[in-house]
Image (cartoon, rainbow, N blue to C red; front, top):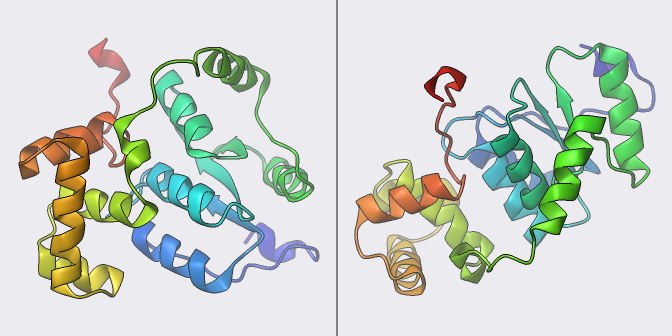
Length: 201
């Protein structure tokens, strides 16, 4: 409703879950994707990372209620171009979209500080998931979400044998040979969401 009033903004598609968002982005090739973090099937950060690798011309702006350090680090690592809290005024969202469209990033000062710290720590060893292709990360995410080969094949529009091949390659590359292990890895890498409880600290 906020964006519909803006003459210079055209909403070309909407998605109910992460996998649908990825599929529509590939199909519609929008300038900007406004991405939530918590979504069914495939979380927004995993989708953002895949788009950053596969379609870097699409700029992703994260819209979420979360601003915990770990989420900020994941936004930056995934290639997100900005972050707008869900409780921000509509005009802030519009300004953020305009800024990202012009090639700028849009982070608040506290988020920018975390971004700088993250860049200083980027000399750490590369994550094992960097060896996975965008399709393999997509399949890994769906495996971790509990989908079977036939269900994954239907979701990504591929054959069951193709999914089995991806599964074998993922396990070989990561050195993990169980579904439980793959799920634990996906959680640790932020490919699937685990609800963060600030009171657990």
